[in-house]
Image (tube, rainbow, N blue to C red):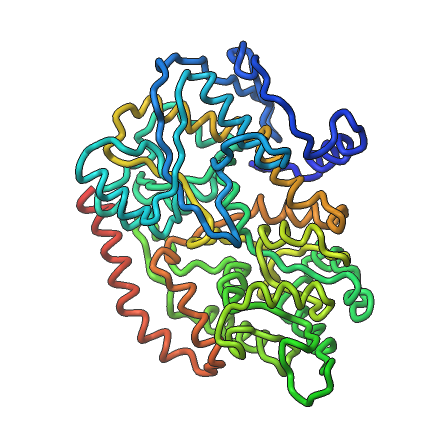
Length: 486
């Protein structure tokens, strides 16, 4: 099922921006009737003929429902539930109004906070059985091991949640469910997760100078590959200051930090853990395909091929320095995520957005891998005292977000001075409707590839074999839990 229709969303936003009375980003006073008569509200799912009917209101008598969330950081803050008041910002106001709508419908008080040690706070609360938190929004990499330790519920045991609806990411759910158990889920409320979607941004001025093809047509024709990117990047590198050295003061075809290694692997759709016919997990760390993926990424990020990998030369991610260089027309391609696109809304020059490139043209489609340590997901502590209520609230968080917060997210991400093009909309359709998830990433194995790529390690077979034993042992532990202990 197609979860998002970017074209329709953009058309609606462009039309609304054309009329002053409904201008984008305009602050509105919350409606006193926003939650009234909700029993008749219906939503027709995209590509479906059935009609979804919103659940009936339930009066919980002013009960407090507490949500703890991972705050993110100043560079990429978590905006899933954090909106304390209307401030005229499109996304903030959509989140605020959605929260208010849920509070009104169920006569509850939503309390949100971000403990500095979220995992530790959840463990402390569960061990004390104090019921201090009802819903947790955290990285899957944090939630999964805590689920194995008994801190989080199997979300399949929570009633009133319709995971088949388009406001829940069914692909993520199926990719992470083992023997009927899911500790976390992603819905349309998790804009922090979608904001972490990896993308390749291109500078339109440099594209006009160095690229003869229409890059969006290249993407649509399935020819946007690592080799295509690398062949163009080679032609762009220029020693701008003439000092005989290549530094961040020069121009490159490809600019990124080593987080891009994770993004490039994710773009291939490779899974480090597969599922056997019996449903058990199988490690997939040693394979010829993975060797090829690694070698292509290593070569793609070499300065000889027009690339500047900041960690290799500066010893750090250098996020802000990279973004400044891109804005200064010092890179044709830059790897970031959708939050990085949001930060470029005031960029003087034009840019476009592409997915991460394919490994080669034989790859069936473009992929976007859920980022384990940046975005977030939904979990419910085992001390949950009213699963029926929490299920209703989570379903409406997802449902209401699909109608209001997701369009606002698109507006902030796409509708800006430089991003009003049909190609970017098509890219977002590709990205947000082709998410996948690899349980193997929960072991942190994907990010471990950053080090050998950064150090330009040519021989990778022995390195992978050295990692394989401990990785396989961890997967055996998962199987033991899901098939023996559960």
